[in-house]
Image (tube, rainbow, N blue to C red):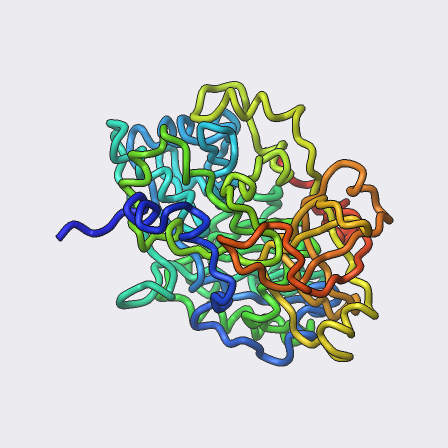
Length: 447
């Protein structure tokens, strides 16, 4: 029997929203990594005041693309600049559909003239693999899935992220001196206790640091070496709970909805994807509901990826993406939740809060102005913050809005129905919320 495709699942469900809307879906957690090593509050504090070590070895997919047409393939299916892409450099990968909206991002590392590794959730990797298979390219690829779906064995690679104001002193202690000068999102291959490690200049929460990548056989040895070097600098291991909050302040919106579900030009792609793929199983939930899946699509311009986009070459979606640049009406902001309303909804001690649900943002008189994408309690600032997109005038810092908190039941109920859900007052602030991420860290970023 032929395995069901994403298109089969959509046809059975009747619409993309009937397939994907799952208000009661359990939140996804980092596999293998402990939820906490000390407390999630202390671990959140570590990347701003000392240093934090996050283990990224288990929760992301890696796909290697290699062959004489690897660069041409990637050039044809993404908006990135490949004329300025050095060996050892990484970029925020920006693939778009024919309508110019994002497929979903990832991190693309160029390891050789025609060898690349794409890392992240599998949607962007699936996009490239489909075109590699169907476009006649001289390219091979191999995927290592995350540990929640891996059927046997260990990951191919370890990936440790060391960041915080004391990260560089820990690096110098571990490696016997500072690493070679490396530009932001560029890497250098070095040795740690005789083991080969790629050091990528990077930091997810906006602080200084590196991502260390290498053969998983060296996982324990490299991790132990970093932990030993970090002891004098108050290095903290970051568990899955704190890790899943680190992008709220740095302004990165994770896992945007792939813009693939209705366009007739993507019918063959939907028939290529499995019904059990990320694209078929990643749920949507929250108080913002629409029967139209395209209301959840995002432009790379809205996500702040303009510096990663090159319109100097032809690629799928180029014309639509170029045309959308001056039409973007929503802006990425941070919402500060009102403390009194938080106490009323969550209790006097709200504790750990983290969700990717799309919650409705409205003006005090009830007009819809946007939706949330990533909401989390940030202990060091004593607030719940939400990374969101809002329209026009509502994006001005200091604007007062309301967030409707709870779950819309989905299809069959009017999107703006009065469901009796509580509202939480919130104040619009800039994104990135973290000053270092907004200034010094962002200034280092290049295409």
